[in-house]
Length: 471
Image (cartoon, rainbow, N blue to C red; front, side, top):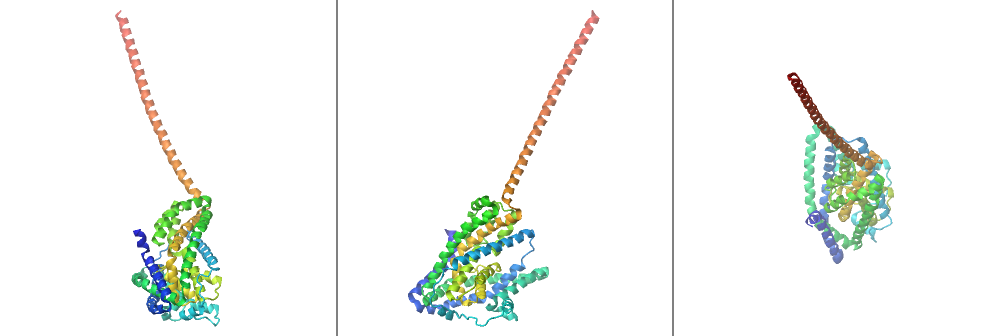
């Protein structure tokens, strides 16, 4: 119980503050507008820190990467499996949320005016819009929250340049790593204010828009949890069957309980790596594949987070109204997770900023996504962790062949048989040595007896000859 409270203390405090804010909003309604400045303080602190956070996190994570010594086939297969399973999770999330209104808001125009949503009226050239999305013409523009994607691209380039510089770039890398540590502590300090900020912001939302938005959060949590449970049992069983047939399913469910419990208890994919790697090896996954797939999956493969991203996007679509294409929803959901290595700030602030930027929604809606991320965090982490275990089995199937589960026990049996044969041979050899020794002793005894009889016979002959002479 103490471990549970320790791991979930932050989440429970946030949930309590949100519930308290909702109650205050229902009771006092429009009067809760006086609490909005307290919520804006939290939002402004987050938005100020987001630019250095993205730059330092991405550049240092790429700059610290070393050239992997794994076989190219294994790495290529891992990436392929991650993309396939992520796409499946994304489609499942979309198919579930498409026919459902996660939040029923009658006056979408009022919401747009409050959040200052500006609708595009002019059609922009696709190539021109892509260039404007990925790059800027002035360094100072990278420091704006409106150019998150361009900042992300620049951060990746800086990280690659650090790697290329090798020893000459070590000092610069150390400066960035040190700055990143300081930035992480700044985020921790800001998050201490999160319960007050989110509670006040939620009271303002409920008071302004009514209880429908609060019911939307509850509805989102219930539907998401049900989807996660079904995905957990149906799709991971299917992946295990694809990887190893009926035997793969049995082995998977025999060993997956420990990673599941650990992920829910700690609410951390990184903390689940040791248990998850051990479980994958127990399933028969080769050591090199398990030790590569699980750590990589912690950063680049998140089934639960991808489904959660679809829910966040569909929540915003229902909140602000308008028609969004299926391809855009799927594309943004994948990009917001696959291109971000993940910084756990209320469910991944960088990913949420990317969603708002790519979807064209105002950054002031960030607290809404933070609330969704908070309430869906435990089931999302569970899918993130167990999804890596199932993926390691599929990678083994492709790399090792269809009999990857059968070959390993055979090898063990062969080794055991060889050992047993060696033991038998040793026993037989020892028996032969004993027999030889016994045979030598017997022959010695026999030869000793024969010599003795010969001696006695000779002595008898001598005595008989002497007696004859005397006569």
